[in-house]
Length: 491
Picture 1 (cartoon, rainbow, N blue to C red):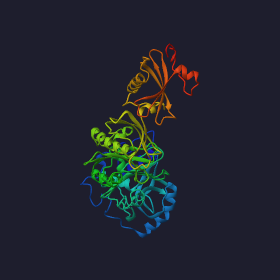
Picture 2: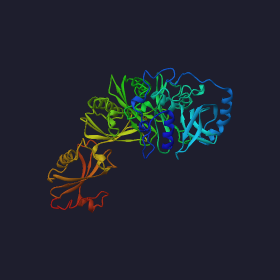
Picture 3: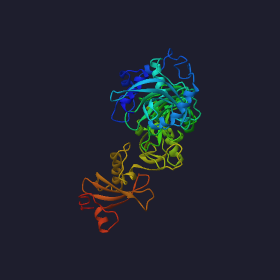
Picture 4: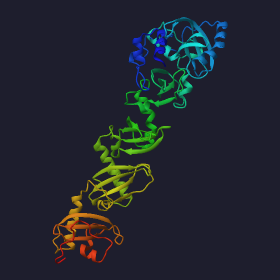
């Protein structure tokens, strides 16, 4: 809407230019202006006239109504408003000052539409019209001063009546109890933003095209606005928590929901994340589908680092709960591991599995790999930190020095007379001949070097081939560490 026309509109409403700054701040983008708290109706303002639900009404002159209805199609066409008039009536004369400061004799019309908001418009002639504004904008101005003009046609009362069918696809069964006009965009796409209250149910925020605008309709549930700068005021926190309990029950029926937090929207823009706090157990985060807020998957707090972590569950409680869960998952997959520590490294979205490193006394060389997220049907795929080194990955809970230290012990047992103190290891791959066996090249401080095969239990070396012998035999695995195996005496 042109700001000059908007100013003219507000002058008709009896609002000053000072109020314009509070209701339509100018920005370079399609931002919206939020209303201050005092723009909301107070208890004294909720009279029969000002509450938008009833009022003194109009004394209808059938002849004037018939003429207004005859003029209405031309008026809405001239204003380029998408409206099929179902009622219209002249509300009174008005001297309108145009942008060039000339004045024209005009009439204020109120028009009701089959769909979309009713509005008030200044009409010099059916083809010369100015400054349309919605009944909700008029109602809002009446909250400032009751003498300001408002909509009185029965089809336009209450002022938000037209929004009921608009919100049904987004808030099924919503019986609108209250509407707050938040503001209007001042750059394309032009829309008005409304917060809708649905009585005992959770409401939402609707972006609806301004009069004569072709902006798309937008919707955001108040659930998703929790904790943001656009938190709803017509829906209570208790309503929001109650509305999300079924989602939490789908994720974990044992959780007694004590709190809910909106976490964010997925990077793909097709889902949202909510964190649930439970009074009887560690909480969790749920990913829900943006289309219908239905359950997609559960994210344990232990795996939520990429989402900023959980705020409603203490870290130690989350870790303790997850350790037990992981121990059970690994046991079912055939790995004995009483998890004492873990590190969630990432996630594999297509299989809904997390990539996790584990530390446990039964697996001294650690475990690392993929474990299914709650609700996933994918399997467990883990290995120890030795084999993961052959894939150019590394563990952090089981360090490289720990791995090298074990190999140092084993080579001294396998080659007790060679005096090998390992200075470098290159992990080459998994043995084809020894199930779970590790192939590695080791370089000793004394320049001896070997290609070794370590047994699956990592407690013995089954084969240690000196570098020069591997080279002479043209073995598949050769020493490549610089200078390795160059000490030949008694090798």
